[in-house]
Image (cartoon, rainbow, N blue to C red; front, side, top):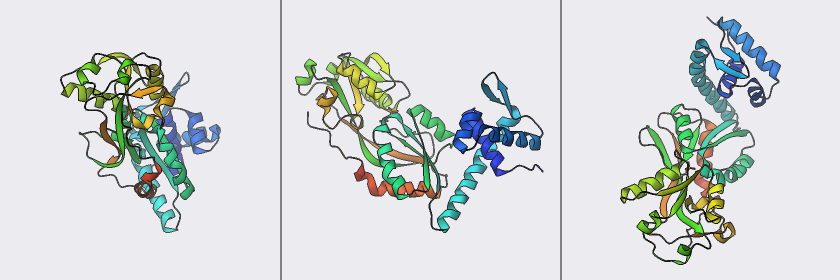
Length: 306
Ligand code: PGA
């Protein structure tokens, strides 16, 4: 029987995930020598090296990989137990881990403010990445909840729509199409586009829609940032398709115009997603309840008439 402590496992999991002693120390609010000591004690107990440092990089040994694959589940279960005990004592505390797609950065952080004010004992780890990365994290069960616009079809998940997510076609305010009405999809497809990177939910939705109409897009440039796309569109490099959530309530301040294009805006939703068989922690359940009761905090915006 191996004598290891929960503290050692927590430290190891953080080092293995972050591939860094210093970042693990920061996350665990301890010093780097404390992290090194916990790892040394754990390696002594296991009797095999778990980590290997080559230059500045940290690699997991075979034993380290095996431990990393198992300890995530244990720590998750133990974390839920600790939260349940705190809840029975009348306080909600613990860590809420949310992975959310790039575009939600325009509203998720704003929603977390009032949530944290209501539950000061809950601290949040918010991972903002594109849809592909969110799906990887979901498949590895790395977080409590996930937020995205295009939930996957091939995973057994619960998806709960909580907000409208509308896609608009944008052009520079001075673009000739900005003055036109009822522009056809065929006309738009001939224009150069600045699109999000492959793996983004916005890109996936747009390409699917054009493909279904037998059209393909003329992609002049790919950019991983909605802000950069807005700047490129405002600068006249091409048309863009972005979520209404990314725009200023008065789009003229972004120096872009929303075009009146057939089949646009594309009306969809933002979804909260989690694996169907996942037992939600107390803090995750508190966040779900909060979100259900507070969606009005997130400006519900009707797409303006164009
Ligand atoms: P994205 O997702 O930020 O990965 O493009 C947004 C969406 O699905 O609307």
